[in-house]
Image (cartoon, rainbow, N blue to C red; front, side, top):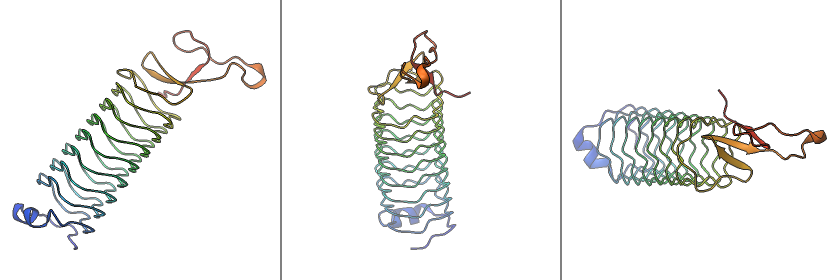
Length: 221
């Protein structure tokens, strides 16, 4: 089905929401629509407007949402497994218990996003902005957070086992994660990578912010 740049009426939403599988919705205006439980599996939503849309329990497995506006959207319990959300605007979106397994969130704007209990296993969050995001009890096992901004993010109980934290910006982190990658610590609200005292040519590592030896920052400024 081809709905390029279409603005949907409420009646049309009711008619089609259970059968948007593989639909072309690029540039479509679905702002404020009720798509609870909708089937959008492998749909093309590139550049679509989903501002304030209700998508709890929706199936977006394998969908393409590159550059899509999902500001303030309710995505509670939705399935985004394998979805492309590159450069999507997810400011203030609600991702409580949402499945974001192996999702592409490169450069995504997740400022203030609610990701309590979200499954981000293997997700690519390279360069994503997670400032003030709530990641309480989120599963970030094996996630790629290279260069991501976690300033004042809440990591209480979050699982970051095997996550890539290279170059992560981590200022004033809130809470204590459940697990961190091997060789990483949370010190004074900053994620710090430990460095062996037996460094190159016997050089002693930098002294961390608490005076501990063997931790170097990856916080950025």
